[in-house]
Length: 154
Ligand SMILES: [Mg+2]
Image 1 (cartoon, rainbow, N blue to C red):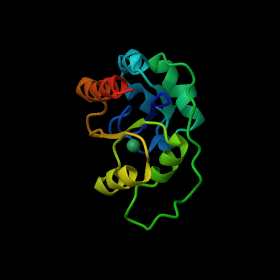
Image 2: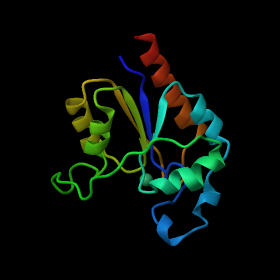
Image 3: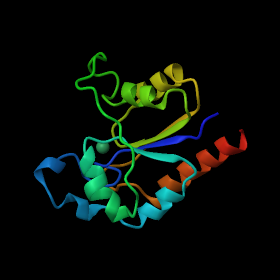
Image 4: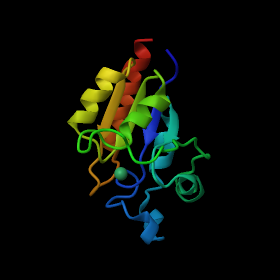
């Protein structure tokens, strides 16, 4: 099995109360630099899964002490039936291409979890973060434990 991926959203998990970054250039100040070394230490490949696109590497990665990361390119408005899947879900599963993955985001639901379980042939952890709090040490401990268990199965 290939190394796991970790898809990382910015607005919500890294920037609590995020979602309007185009309108507020001060939002990166909400990023907690202490999260960077913890994310970097996880046994997986980090990938941006955010509408920040290139700005994630230019403005967010330096705060976290992370190198430039690969990022998912979005195809535009989803063709999924409205109200069912989150707009990122199909693209993330396509990018993973059968590799195990963690997806940290504040905006998926049970339909996404069910759809990924059916559509993706490898283990996947969709880890929901409360956007009013942002990514916590407890969240990272959950992700780390899941990755550790995955590693012990390989
Ligand atoms: Mg978000």
